[in-house]
Image 1 (cartoon, rainbow over the protein chains, first blue to last red):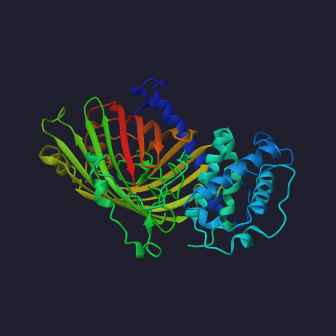
Image 2 (cartoon, chains in turn blue, brown; image 1 turned 120 degrees about the horizontal axis):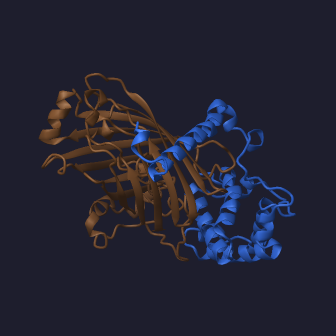
Image 3 (cartoon, rainbow over the protein chains, first blue to last red; image 1 turned 90 degrees about the vertical axis):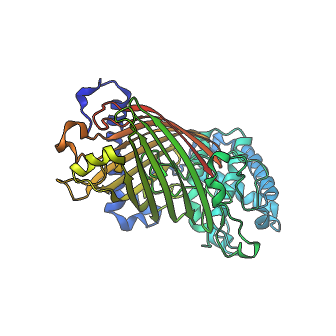
Length: 176
Length: 313
């Protein structure tokens, strides 16, 4: 390993090394959890400690997304992009758009910690009628990011929202 | 890792290389063969942008996707399930006494398997006139569990296992040194990587454990008269996403120090770097870094600027 005497303690490389050794220790601890409890890592999220991505009743993310008016604008923009996108149009061209928009607004409101609860069929059943691959899911996320950009939502808030939506791939992606 | 700012009308057709535009890296052109339309629904199709920007990492100097120095559990390119993707890279690093270049390509299938080829060249003319070391690396990586990006409600990282088969051509002068310490010209590194993107926080973490006998990553051969067993070396990366197109971070790569018994000049240090990766779109990324390679064959403090260009189809 490198000789600590040969360089000043404040040298960027020394700082990087110490920072990374600390992070390696931290990363090892982070990873030791799932390794030690390999079974629970595959269990539903409710039974494992999860990264801080869950919503709460008084969540400011909902407010920062513009609450109901903001989410309505966001979903209007998103659905327009879905119909314009050659990858996504086949999935949505025959859909009842009014109903779709209502469901999307309610779903986003719920995950962002707003006062909504999505009713109706569960996510897996809603999407069961058509083959959806991970690539399709990711394509929709890209379009959602474009809509979030258009609404002026900041990068950090976009990622907070996406962190709450990403686990839905387990219910939505149904084709290999 | 980073999210793209794609145009409102993304391409629907399979992407093809434009070799004229990237003439300097004709490798990429050779990789893009058209897939017959009839086969597209069944056969893997070219990456249609299935993955989010920079979720494949960048090309490491050994060819595998990850950071610049270490392989990550993510597979390179933007290939998602049922997709095939390819990347090519060229890297240059200049230190006070050496010039190091690397170039190579990787292909990924269905976000599951990644194969890579890389050639590294260390120009040591400042040390021994005409000395040039060449290291070839053939790599394979298989994703075995988890999803670094989408499993954002779990601590479970994405895990991959990989192997890198390496062969060095040290030239005459350095070859004699390798023979004197009984270092062989070929070796295989085995590794396991765990990568996690903490999406809400915008932080990516990677830990890699590598079983290796390589001296200076293989540039000074493999093993020695005194050491024949693989050593387990840890590697770590951390990256912070500043915005959709830019990430900064650091890497650390521990290395075995198996030749030090033969003299202080052959002592080997851990490698580390601070980097910034910029991706304006899904086809191009540029990485700039400050890399510290420590002691290389008697020359200490080999630190310098690293630049890497990666193209993706």
